[in-house]
Image 1 (spheres, helix red, strand yellow):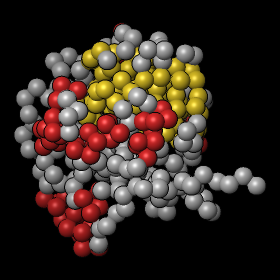
Image 2 (cartoon, one colour; image 1 turned 60 degrees about the horizontal axis):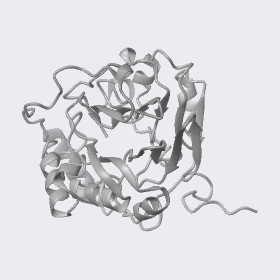
Image 3 (cartoon, one colour; image 1 turned 180 degrees about the vertical axis):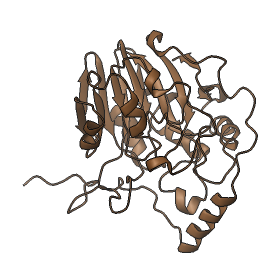
Image 4 (cartoon, rainbow, N blue to C red; image 1 turned 45 degrees about the horizontal axis):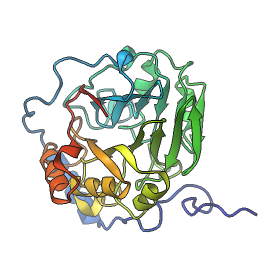
Length: 318
């Protein structure tokens, strides 16, 4: 009888890799968090947060990337136009509930061009946005790659070609190789389904580039293994926001300093900060992460210019 991988829980569901941080919060911590979120207000938006014009994703060149907001990127590799975690709606939650954007996405879901691939890292509402997915015009033609357990939900949105992968499994789309990799997080969209579906990061490799998309993740021992087995990477897309209070978030989201540590562990040449600048999921100033990310890159000798903070809608070559 084949032994199940360590991240598969007996009886069903999934868990984080060995050596991952664990939550230390008490009921009082959660109460304080809820009270802090009731009082939290979005500060004035910094100037230059968004690019002057929205990107034309259909004409992205090979090895160009556009940030559409939060964890949603479009990039072209091996001739394929890829979109990650397309949260593009106004609200991150069911039936209009949940946190609302303070800055709209760079592109509306119904205006997306035909994509060659959509990659979904996990089922949280700010990463798997069913309203945006159902508004996308080319659902029948575009394949979706996702972790275990998400295919049924995605097929209900009208996608016909859905590929579920476990950690360390590979799949190819022409000359583009996609590897599903571990992340330190959790899953769930409602009561009773916590950790029933898998969460993941992804590697995208062409003949000339290797890109890592972190999805949602805290730091952990597994990232050195990812660097050794799947790296090094030309570009790492890593979350830098929604990290307070640490007693709650330390097991699911990285601080800006930890994000640089993750990029170093996986052997990334350049790191792009994401998971900020769209919605307030936690009570800290949503823009303090930018300065901390740059400062951490300098202090950890990663290189300040190697830590990118992109404008919403900006396009860069990598």
